[in-house]
Amino acid sequence: MRQPSLFIPHGGGPCFFMDPADPDRVQSDPMWQPMQAYLSGLIADLPARPRAILLVSGHWEAADFTVHVGDRPPLLFDYHGFPPHTYQLRWDAPGAPDVARRAADLLRGAGFATREEAARGWDHGVFIPMKVALPDADIPLAQLSLRRDLDPAVHIAAGRALAPLRDEGVLIIGSGMSFHNLRVRGPQAIAPSTAWDYALTAAVTDADPDQRAARVAAWADLPHARFAHPREEHLLPLMVALGAGDRSAATCTHRSSVLGWTVSGYRFG
Image (cartoon, rainbow, N blue to C red; front, side):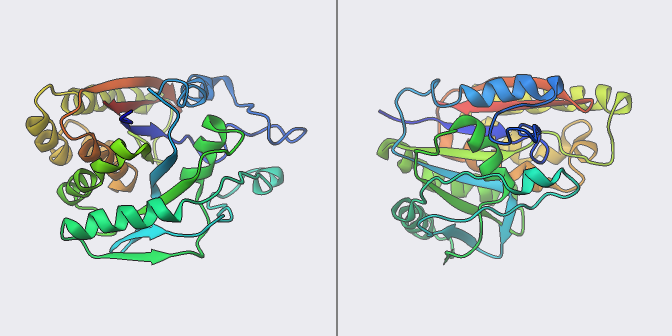
């Protein structure tokens, strides 16, 4: 059964695992709980359990699209200033080198240069949301990098190249944040982040797939775009998910407010 592609918010650092007495228990501030509940239901909402996941995180950039071919990657604790126990978290899912290499083949077939690597750990854009969604760590996962130029049209095209994986039982996930400006929080963020979110959602859910891609590729023209993303690395995973969605219906599947930001998630198919 064909899998959808998803764009999910991955939260802020280890925000869902803040209980030092039981670090593996999902325990977050009430502000994060709607997002936590959304991630917890991610797999149950699929048409079938995926055989593997291909995930693109906003925390890995490379000169060319790069696939992680490790069998069981370690974790990369690429957040700062959190309690000591959050640097001892575990998420021991197997890698999916076969899926990684299949993804690289599809990208090369579409004209993209690709690379492989096996040493890098899974960053928190991978293991934090997946630890909520898959606490048993029992679905293999392959990670794909962003391309460092952050070109939206390129990432949409890369997603299109990866779309056949959906028919092979692979769930494609873009993991980022629809709003990501760490310099603004609280009341000053509410109005512009909400206006941005509704404009972004209107573009992402355009019923015409060609118009949808064009509008999202031109994201910087939307209201408050650079307020929402001074740098767009957390938005680019959406481009991959949208491209992989091909001509599937697009829906907004999550919206919550954290730190004064309006944050959304999307599903294609």
